[in-house]
Length: 383
Image 1 (cartoon, rainbow, N blue to C red):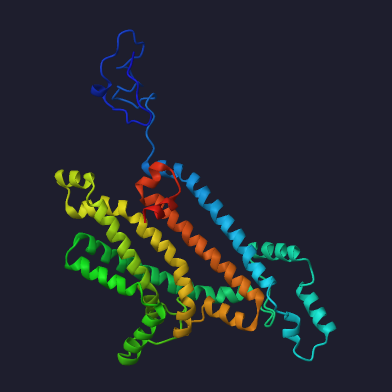
Image 2 (spheres, rainbow, N blue to C red):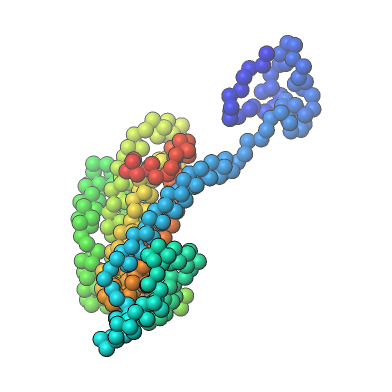
């Protein structure tokens, strides 16, 4: 009787690996078309799929869980967003028509806005329209809300993307340097700098950058924005300061998380084994250790997205950026509820999309998450 082969184990190939045929066996170990035949592929030995194909085959389960969680959060957020707008004391008919409007005129205007319908019907129509890209119209300008958000959102996405890049590069480099210096002067200096940056608000950093870089040195403009598609070089000049101001807090958190994870990972037995086999320190760090220790830092990166968007409210005001935060602030001041609801819903969608992207990156990079087949959000526990 032949020996049992564990499921998923790699089968040896070649005549030497096939071994002698056991007594009483009817298999032709040396014949064509068998596992031991070197002249052709063996039909009894299925080829193992490529690692990326096996990884993609396991992806639907955590991906479906993430999509289901995101859909649930989006639905609850839409209820809260619409409920806050509907329960406000805003009277759009009176606000649009002015002080000389009669109650009949106000009622007629509110009917035109559809505000005399049941609240559930209003929510269903609003959510259905939002899922199809129609967020309604502004009560005061009558412009489509989706068009206003479409003009403001690229400003936030471009500045936030540049800020995330700064945070990833600065925080990653600082975390690696601190971990390699574990307990040394570099480690203590980076830890002290991160502690300071983690407590300084972004608007304080923004004012300091404008004072030094724009006013004293005159190196970069203190405010304004040029779209990337219009002039990439000018876009970078205008986006550098706000992006750098927003990135420092996230960079400090990434550096501290990555430093802690790397210090623990560098003490693992597989690192000692890799060094004993002659692998270079750079290959061990960037090929094995960093990949295992990147999970908590990636989780912090994903959690930085809502912080960047929240901090953009003040930063956009300081740097005079026509972003979605300024659009929401102006709409709140004029009680333009459809615009407020639209900006909040789009912001929630952007944050959820960023979290899904981070979870996908965690599932691809973290071996433990793939082995467990669990949700990538488990990396938060490690953080």
